[in-house]
Amino acid sequence: MPDLPGQVTATALGPWPGEDPVEAGRIIRGELGSPHLPFLAELPGRGVGSDALGRTASLLEGLAADVQPYGWRLVDRPGKDYLRARSALSTDLNILADLIGAEESPAPEIKVQLRGPLSLAAGLHLHHGERALIDHGARRDLAASLAAGMDDFLRRVAGAAPGARITVQLDEPDIAAVLAGTIPTSSGYRTLRAVAGSEATESWRLVVDALRAAGAAEIVIAVPEVEAPFERILAAGADGIAVPLRALTSRQWEHLAAAVEAGKRLWAGVLPVDEPAAALPRVPEAVEALWRPWRQIGLPAAALGAVRVTPAGGLAGHIPASATAVLGRLTQVADGLNQLALG
Image 1 (cartoon, rainbow, N blue to C red):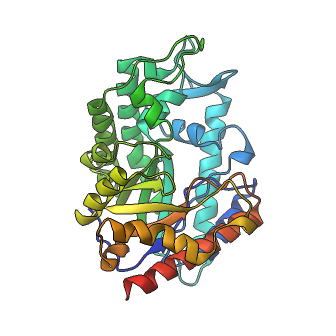
Image 2 (image 1 turned 30 degrees about the horizontal axis):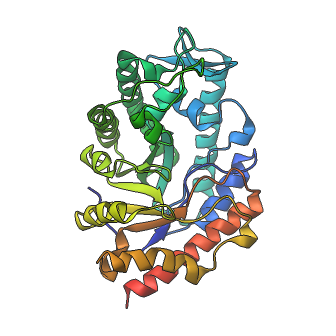
């Protein structure tokens, strides 16, 4: 478990607009300087291989993937799309190293994002076209392959950001459908069998343990606006949960409160991403969206240091200017919460 800071900080979830990693890196590092958490941007606008699924697939150890008409598929040997994904990531890490090298006082932290093992299995297809999620052995092999690739990946991140504290965000956008058995088969006429919650916990634990061994200082699992299995995420050893606030139920808040009291982090999605930056909530409104349930559940102001504020989702659908405005608003919200924490 990481040492929790004494103040609220800000970060974003990874996806970023545009195709220029230099511009993205400069904006992100400029807006999210210390004490906030800058991140390595994902730029899906660059095309195949720069999407979250392709980037994560390129890190698998002993497995390769390529793009077919229906999406990414596991293949016998690396193809051009796999190589493109690896090249794009190498480029991004080289650019990150250059940006950090030019800074007088680099931020002491860096965050990277990956697709988690359950959503990875839901997104990758087997040779015959069905999702890897359909096969228990394939799910197990994917989780093990992802875990095995983490040492090399974090070594490369550490090389680009020497001495920085590395945070890893595992994205599980499909987790509710995976556990409920509502993901359609390739034909679309039926759905895949639900994955047991215990298997989800074990898959996460395998990857979390590998990340920890590879040097990750903090590991957070990000879930969407669903009845996510918070207890299983924390049982897997994650340091915290990233979740949008607007759809949380009272029961979920109770689980999150227990997690915070146990020393875990809450990455709170306080700003909507489906609206233009001009329509973003004002700072007092965004602060109150967190502060009200925080008080109602009985958490003290002093515990706000467990919080990072984020957008409710990725920012790839914005233009760079409005995505930048979101980061600026997040740091203002963090400042507002810190004022409450100080009484």
